[in-house]
Every structure is written in C-alpha cells, then in structure tokens.
Amino acid sequence: MPMPKIFTTRLSENRDAVWAALASALDRCLLEKPLAKISLAEIAALAGIARNTTYNYARDKDGLVEAIVEHYADVIVSEVTEIAAGPQSPEERIRAIVLAILAWVADAEHRAIVGHAILGVASDFTKPPRTLMLIREQILAVTEQGAKAGAFRDNATLTWSLLSGVIHAATTQVVRQPLVRPQVETEATRIILASIRRS
Image 1 (cartoon, rainbow, N blue to C red):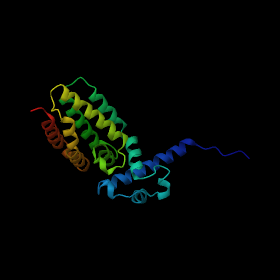
Image 2 (image 1 turned 60 degrees about the vertical axis):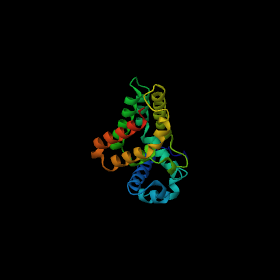
Image 3 (image 1 turned 90 degrees about the vertical axis):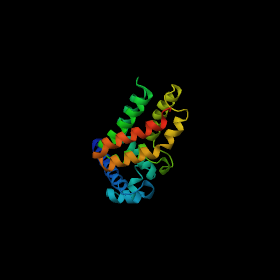
Image 4 (image 1 turned 60 degrees about the horizontal axis):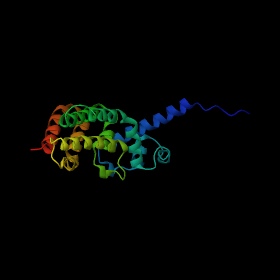
C-alpha cells in the first residue's frame, strides 16, 4: 500500500497558525504584566494550545519570545542597520533610529512582544534576543562614532546604556497608546540627545 502524501503547504499553514496564536497570546500577556511574571503554560492556555505542543516551537519562554521576535522584527533590523550606515551626522542618525523604532513599534503586528524584546529590560532574558543585540550594536556603533567626532561625550556609550529605562518607557507608552507617539518621540529624542551630546 503506498504511503500517503504529506502536503507541506498544509503543515506549513498549521505551523504558521500555531505561531500566530502563540504570538497573540504572548502579546496579550505583555500588555498586562512583565515577561518575568508570565509562564509558558499561561501563554499556551491563552493560545488554546497544549503546553507540550509549545515545546515543538521553543524550549522555554525566552526561546519562544526570541523566535517570535525573529519572525516579526527583520524589517526594523534592516531599517536600523541602513540608518546607522548612512551619511548623516551621528546625532541625526541616533534621532532617526529612535524615531524608526518608535514608529515601527506603534504599527507592528505583535508590537508588545517586539517592543519589549527590542527595547525592553534585557535582564528579563537569560539570553537577550538576537534582534535586541543587533539593534543595540548599531546604536552603540553610531554613539562611538559621535564620541570620536567630538559630537558626543566620551562616555556616551555608557550613558546610552543607562538610558535604556527611557527607551523602555517610550516604547511601552507607544505600545499601549500609539496615538501619543508624536509627543513621546519628541521627549525621548530630546532626553537622549541632551544626555549624550558634548556640552
């Protein structure tokens, strides 16, 4: 008796549907509480998926967040990389990166997850998502160029690291209330640039 054919498109569609359900469930959880207080079992239950099934997609909660972010955040990584390599001054590039991230977080599907992972508190992760690391590397490279050019303070890289709370607050505000984005953009860029500029 011949073996039945496996229709990969159907398997693929099913896999995509499970990813979408898990992403939506995690998004809902993140709008209510921090990642540290969310369990994989809670995400699975909200997604309507058996907890054991989630292990086919990720080993643990951090792995699930990272996989979802990788899926949805390629666009912003490309955009930030392009801005960071651009011909503008370091200050203009930092401003453009912050604006691009906030604009994207305001409009992105599953923006709570992506916003949290890109600009969230890295200590929530045992291993920060690759996306977070790539964007951080681009920002720090521009900051270091600005310091070498004399536009930013010598310790601008350290200052930027200390500003992660400002960025996290801005992202959270935009995720929860996309309509306040223009005011948040203005204040976030003002605080960041005032902090790293050479006086």
